[in-house]
Image 1 (cartoon, rainbow, N blue to C red):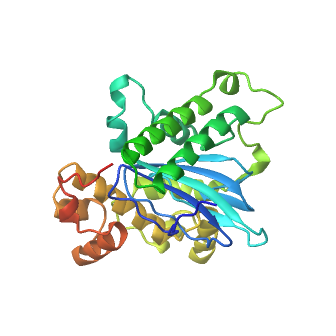
Image 2 (cartoon, rainbow, N blue to C red; image 1 turned 90 degrees about the horizontal axis):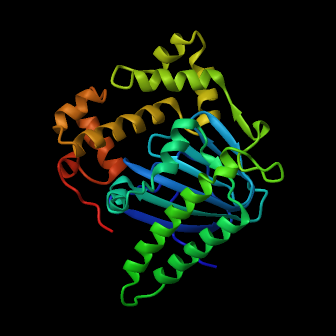
Length: 300
């Protein structure tokens, strides 16, 4: 069985893509961070798990696929009653798609549609699933070898996976005329959400550059801060503070990539203390803000 040494709170900041096949007996629940300007495919293969994302909790079946962007805050919740937990994860930096857009095909389309229409989870049919798994197996075989051109082959298999994802996601018969014998999209009873948390996420996102504390957010919704904090973590997998920090740091990362100064990124993104901003940035992205500014460190 192919197995990667995958770190749960893994950060991807240096490559155009990264691929992992995770196979383990236990998998802790914690917020997962994947850097900025990224899309992620999460293919659940085995175990007893749900997935928390943006205030919604998805009950997962084997072979479910989640399409996630770095605008999402998410984490898997795994039950230890199952003997195994297995999934495949593919991270792709947005810059990867500039290398493939010359054909006129936007391979990020499925991720964008999933984010805009809240259709993050879908279930490919057996034919598309088989082709996806074959492409994944090809990557794993190449990753274990040091053969001529294996990096080029892996690059091509990543393109194949993204192409198959879009085909499976946008199949007309599934979006416009669903087959009653095949449930492509999860049923209402497979998604749990809370309207208060949904509203609080909107509030935080629209005030991300302002002073945000647990007290101010809870008072805005006229509830106790302890109750709000408990409810927030239950539905998002992280504390309000962790969510706010992730949003601010990703926003700062994007600003730096677009040429903003470090001080402007710090101030605009709601960091009142410059030294705390530097420490949090280094801890999250593994580099100083000055190293990100106007530099493209990503490589295939």
